[in-house]
Image (spheres, one colour):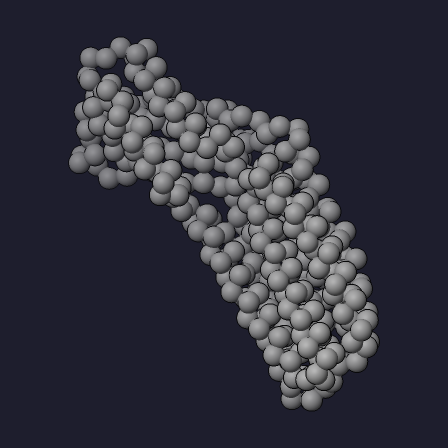
Length: 313
């Protein structure tokens, strides 16, 4: 006999607090506004100076702006409650957004590398270096403040889209520092080839960081299991329950704020249904304690014997 303890249309999911929801929606808007400001400043001075590293940073800021707008829409959609058409919720929209964002960032990295190679071929120099240095110093201050804000939001909400944005802007902070360093070297030495070298290095670094983001997002879209330590905690909880004779067919996955667990537990054949239900409820409550910041969707099948060898799942 199977007992589904959680209705897919009404899982035992705690609603996010008003504060966390507001932070999630506000973060991409703040990031969008700051990215637009930086893109305008960097692009203007980059075209004026001819610095490929500064132009690369401007392109990255433009990408940031569009990605942050997309993230805002993704968060609005992923926050919708499960419905008849999508009974397991919209959590995977966050993973989709993170994957697409990673692909966009990889594209910007490839563009930076292309521009660096073109500048090397054409032997172009850099002008208005003092102005460029001032712009990059301002950019580091602004992006640093944004990174601090997004770090705070991630700690409060654990939102994957905001995590992706945080990673993105951390990358920007490093790349902005590299651009500032390259401009400083050129200012004191007139080694204009440094601009090309740093442009290539920034491009490769961005591609590396973006690949990790795409990998994480695609794993979630393919229903990767929960982190190994969380799975082991779930197994330990079940094994240490004296009323449970055994378990099998344990499956886990996650999507955004939602974490899903399915399993069969074996109880004595003549147990009262009420007692069996209380045992399963107790396991549910203990599993939810593993991560209180996530919304758990737990389905437990009650077995009078171990049927794992009788059929495939």
